[in-house]
Image (cartoon, rainbow, N blue to C red; front, side):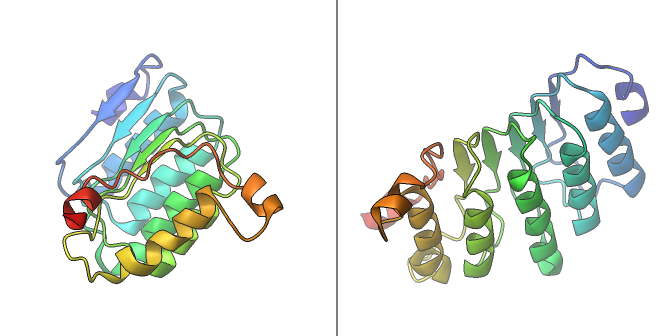
Length: 186
């Protein structure tokens, strides 16, 4: 599939949802498709069980040149023990000044407070991202992410520590995509 797609430079959407356990060769092929396709606007690899090396390869492809990609979906990635490495790749994409991502969905991935801090930090100077979907770990109100992880994002969008910090806050990010937050409050 990737062999044929790498010559198509007009492709706008690649949706490989539920393609469990993409092989290394497929990820390498997909990396070439991303690099060779300036028209690509949306990439959905949700529920693909990519390992850390696979996500890093995708991140490298997205960071290697000015990419027109506007939406990246990595929902329910089953990131397991190497989750921090996968999140580091996502942070790398978000910090890339050539990135034009407007929506990143990483719902249903286990993100702890340290990961939330890294994600929020990667968005400090990002002026393109409008929505970061983090609808995760919200099934239990006692989850540490809800209590301490959200504070990193609150300070990102409006840092009240000083007038200058408030002015320098990220005013582009308009949604963290917490659909279940309202359900918890009731």
